[in-house]
Length: 104
Image (tube, rainbow, N blue to C red; front, side):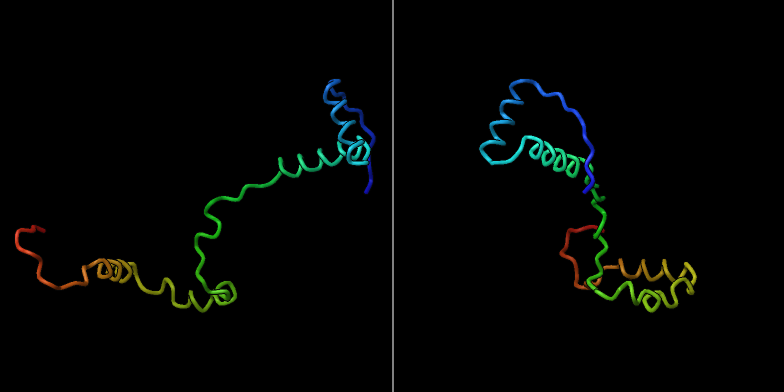
């Protein structure tokens, strides 16, 4: 890994704590600073994915491979057929009599 030399100014109390931690861990202060910078930059640059990712999971692990089969014939029927099918799917399926006193 290529490194670049830089200078960082720390306040005296932070520098004393850094040196003490480095001594306790048997590492150099520079090593701790590099580790802290690497962790911070990785966390600060993580991309947050939109919540919509994965919402359309079909449950079919081969969906992407077979999309042409699933779309075969799509759009061939007119919109009238689509809306007719949509409307019929919204019709109540239960044909039992409703209790008296209920209005529609």
